[in-house]
Length: 438
Image (cartoon, rainbow, N blue to C red):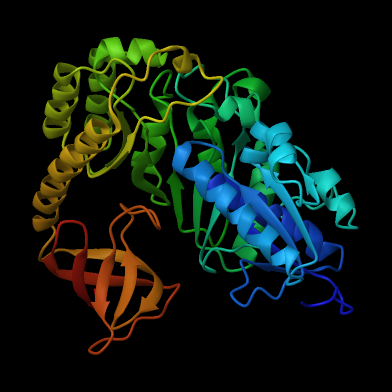
């Protein structure tokens, strides 16, 4: 058994869940570094003798992964491989009393708004002046920019408001400063994130201000791509589409989780929209920005979802031909309004429905990709892996979308740089190409 460390403390931050959690971990790490602390992110050698786990509590599988990770590091603490374990983030916010009762060897639990208290326990001061100061964990050429916290939407299936609180926009001037700082450190692509981009600005400016924010961010020197994640269909500010169309820096891309299309299911989900309204909005997207890649996320197996309602969703996916699409099986979450409904769809049927939609989407993606063969796209390259360099077009977000592969045995491209790639082959999701000069 290893005895307690006599060397200077090193803090290992472990992040689970979505890009919002990545951002929060980066802010935490920036504060710790500014306080002179040694900090690492998910250190491969587990050298950190103090571990901070930033948890996810969104759906069943994410909660299970968070609990498993906590138990993993508690076991390391028990045999003396780490000295202290702290838990923060969404799972801790949502289930703190239960966690304190069930996993007692964690030194302390913190919620999503407890950063100053967590820093204090780590013997660091919260520095209010650190606008834009983060220790980014993404590749050096792109970063997430969280423009708001929390959510005011009443979606029946979603526990995020329980964990993140009410919507709170960050002022435009603060976000511009943060973007300028990121650009000065070599960031070329900003990925705008929030629980709901569509709502941005209503609390601060009494109007939806996402378009205004985008216009200001395009002025930041060094930023070449700006990408939008997690828009909401109800109340979507149409002026954003004009900015996407007219501003070269704003990618022709939007991530808009639609969840379902059957009007009865949407009503039960409390989404504030219908089949007709959703379809009309997407038609407007295509009319104003014909070259736009639309990513969406769907939920199947929602309480009471009939075979006919699922078939309507499947037929609609075939009709809309989304460029990017993901599907989740419904997760029955405590303290959400849908939890009062009977979880009627068996897990096996949920998974079958997930697979049916994804098989359909795979075919759609393959057909869309075939039209790209012979064309040239400006790509940014994220990494080299095995015999290939992996890049992305403006229509692809990191980790969730398609890759553009270049054979490293034949060609060289610089990671973090933009390169023009001519596509010579296309699969279901990935493209293959070679560098060209234009």
